[in-house]
Image (cartoon, rainbow, N blue to C red):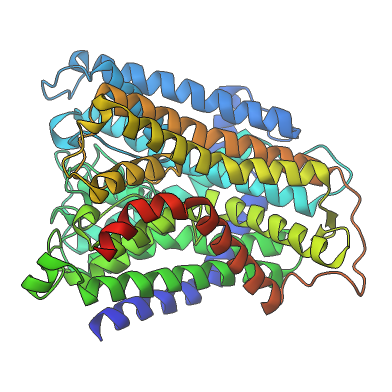
Length: 549
């Protein structure tokens, strides 16, 4: 009952905040007025805020900004022993620095090291924490560019990446991070340099901010749906997440922005019902996953949980099984990766659900921005399938889904599974990679599959029984994070550009009503079927085989 009330209260608050916070984000993104601080930033980087960008220029801006960010963050880590507030730590090893730089710039926040014993305060604050904000803002910017593609017609302009980036940081992520950090400090999350966590949590719904106060870092971590934390124990650490209600608040931060972005989508395309439909799809998948994960953990199947009477291994007693399962569902349904319990200790089938959440493409509600554009890709695929079934040219929001559009959507859909399955196959075929597996058999495969699923979907959580701080895994997972982030972004922006150039098609009697329950159910079915067809063989050899045993 306590677990049910915990989850129900989260749903209620998200429903209440959907409209006002979504409207606030809409005004922040679409306002014609530039704040003075924003104008100063535009002048500093030489950007004309009134200039429009085609999809190609928008994509090149995203890639250039991210490439420079990776290089700077890599260099920052390599010379940290010469920096102020280094705490006497040595430079980060080249492969680890590469992995960490890519991880935080791609909004993954995968950490194969202990933050408190590897990074100095300056690297945490000025390197990792900054990326907790801007990498989340990149995701929102790309999502807004795709929405403009649906909303605009007969134009090449998708907006201005630099304006979108600055506005999301200044008007959305920073204010929520500050408020969230204050709330967490009131809840007992410590505020000091050595903890560095509060700000991070707020950026996680935006992301976890490392290197500043623990409270600040924790907020950034959750708001940006990043997941990286100052402490290796992450949100299980009492400095980062001391009580049951701070646990509840962190989950709220994780879900807040992704669940409210559909409201922005609905208002921008001029039909709020469309936003509600997308939010409804996200909610159905999220609630279904949360119920399944709670049921499997509370049932505590398996030899050890049955003998102990509960699946409490790797679970903090101040949270309990139900709150931990709800946190795990939220963090794997988004691109957060923060954990308050160890997923590797979950029951076999419970661990399988966390994997399937990421394999959905993290669209329920998904990452900050990436969840919305991932869901819209699924909507495009669903409309295309529906059109084939009735022999009609598929349309979505008045835009025809032709050969060019479906190619972009299909490439988006195929990228992540290819990275996950190929990466897992290479690792399992490599003696060096297999040597990192601590648990033999089906669970060992699950650990590797989880690692590549998490990296390729830019999640950041892990089954902790595998040692990934090796040259092979730092390199391979870094490549998966890089390709899993930027190839889909290119395909999304290509689709947006193609849609923006079209002339809208008037709605007719045969047009699929994409705001009705029928369409909502169709998208849910397509999402589940695609995941099962793609991943079932691999899952059957790992967590499913272990669960059957």
